Length: 92
Image (cartoon, rainbow, N blue to C red; front, side, top):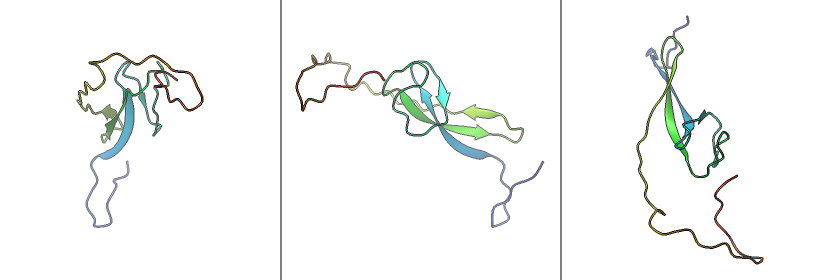
């Protein structure tokens, strides 16, 4: 293969990209801006991870451990009817 060089003449060893991985089913998608998982449909479980592509072309997905316990202490409110109500969206 070809060897990539920067404008300064430094050789590039790895190419780094971003992907989104679901915390529930661990499905990885390269589409940015996804709020719901395309595979399982869970909402707010898509986390941004790095994609490392080595010299042989093998892609490895990074892991970001961010444990957010917000919203787990209290139960969800009952859905309300009406015109101007914003009920929580849980699934797509």
